[in-house]
Structure formats: C-alpha cells, structure tokens
Length: 138
Image (tube, rainbow, N blue to C red; front, side, top):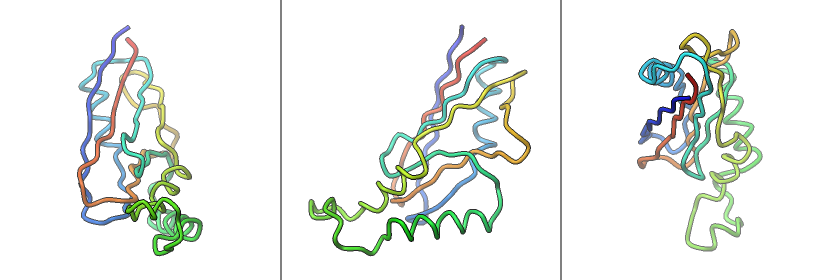
C-alpha cells in the first residue's frame, strides 16, 4: 500500500465562500500515482468545511442562506464571542457542513457520482487556511 499527502491553501477574499476544489483534488490523485484506493480531503481549521454536492449557483446560494438562518453572523449573544472572538457562527456552520470527505479512487480517478463535486466551505476567511489531501491505496 502506498500513501500520498499534500495540502491546499486557501486565503479567500470573502469571509464566507464556497469553492469547488474537485479539479485540484483530481490533479493530486494523478500526482499520487495511486490507481485504486481512497482519498481523504479534510479541512484543517475549525471554521472551514469540506463537503460534496452539486455545482449549481442557486444551490450554493441556498446553502449559504440556510446556514445564515441557523447561525447568523450578526448575533452578539454567542457565548464563544464573549471570549473576544467574533466567529462563533463560523464554528457552527462548519459543524453543519462537515469536516471532511472520503472518495474512492478507481482507475486513477475520483469515483464521484454524475453531479458530485468536492467543495471547500470557508466561514471565517480572509486568512490562510489549509486542507489536507491524503490518498492511500495501490
């Protein structure tokens, strides 16, 4: 069994953003030279997310609107924010959207469904954050 590790770094221009990273992950699968195995894509920050869904602007807008309705950014009564932080909403949004995805690698490619794409969700951006990509297999 072989393993391959790399990192993507994001420094978004917006505080909250959803970015399709499928192409970047696909390039790393090729670089890994692993033909059959698994690919873990993991947000390494507690205010960022990695998830799988459809690349469709309306759906991405709906996700952001839904997240904001559940964990509004402008609420001042989050206990976490009493510590001097202002990003409790981002921690909650990350928990709702998830930390990582694991995707099968088949014949040297991501084995995704017909509409599935991998996204990086940033909920407290404008600073560098890393995503771990680990591929294991043969």
